[in-house]
Picture 1 (tube, rainbow, N blue to C red):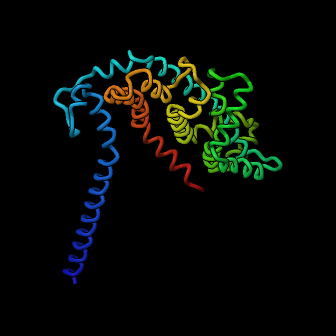
Picture 2 (tube, helix red, strand yellow):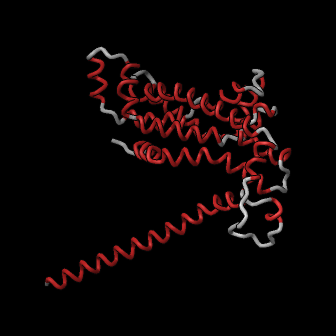
Picture 3 (tube, rainbow, N blue to C red):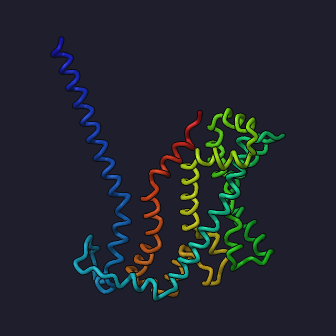
Length: 289
């Protein structure tokens, strides 16, 4: 009897070990597939132009790395200006978005007013509208207001997000109503309750939304390309096209890869630093009760 129990336990442990081993092998293989483009991008960026063009068969390593391409990335085009424009655009857009979505999420989750649920449903239905239609409407509006080639024109269409309001509203709704009623009994105003109770409790989600918005702004391409044709207002995303056309040329791939590495590095660092907060915030957004 004991032998059968021991055998069954050993068999279960063996199956668990085999299952875990296969899982880690598959995850490692998938990680290699995902990370290989980044490795290839960095590898290409440290190859000089002559050695890159002389490779009839691509090599997966280089014996003579160089940083010349990185210096060219800042001298051939005003990449520093593109960075500064992107930082200004990202910071202002993210700050204004938080000013808009936090009170909106609070209103939909805590305040009682006639037609709240119907209004929220209508609000969510805006997510069904194709992005291309919104771009056309925004472009016409911004052009009629004379805001092309301005930071105001770049920022205004991005200061709100239906999805982020929904995500934050779901988090606010998880906070027990008893806290709100107790605060009202003590004479606490709604704004004070929002800043003293709800925002601290939902800080992980707010941080996640902030990081996701920063990534969205940093990668923004279509709208800045439509609304700006002045290089003084180019962002790093649409500055890549300027780099390709008027900087290094279409054939200098190593220099292009160096510029892409420089542009991508801040987002990679941001994600690595705040990855736990992002996962925690997304998990809270998907939990109810």
